[in-house]
Image (tube, rainbow, N blue to C red; front, side, top):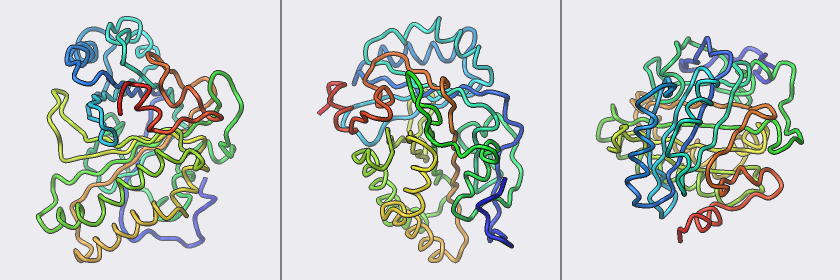
Length: 313
């Protein structure tokens, strides 16, 4: 399971990984692309927070890398059948401009990593986490996915969507950071992070199908001191190649390491991610057909095309 780990590798800092994942988890990202249509947002919030079959964990955000006003809800169901029942009763899903992208993820096909044992956003809210030494080297994410021990997780032709699409949600929480750390993060690191996400959004040749930058919020829509990147890739290899060698990701990595060194290797920034590789038939789309995933992987529209299809600039 650790085919990529260099012999004798010992991480220099601790990290935690979620354990005891459910047999199958449904993760659904539901977006309201109707600008100032507050009624659609409120109806969706009501659907997600009341009645039967609501998510086991629910978060909210707003989309940053667009000129539109886009509300996003992110739900995690530990029972995919419960998610399916929720979809059948959710009134907001029938509204124009409301789109959902759902991944049904088997336990052996995803992994998480956290720089703290504290609870961060994402599926970690539902699970315990344990220390792991499978980190701090290129290819560690693949090594943490149990299915990779017997499967290369390459893209596979399938209908209506190819198998082994790769989903990443990667977050940054700065609520505990002092003034100097905040200053360094927002002057040196965050601009590179934003630039990398924008690059992926406009360059489908990287294998990235969709690249979204979210500002995390309370369920009622107040900004939190937290962001996350949600990206869909043609396969895990495409994500790995960008992470390991592309200048836009290396700029993020290098600026973060420089910040850590400037702070004497004592930081309060909380980092986390979750990566999943979804088998054929495990991705479900509902609502508008403007989702970039609708064209995966051969006809991948740019983020600009996506915005225009929703009536944006």
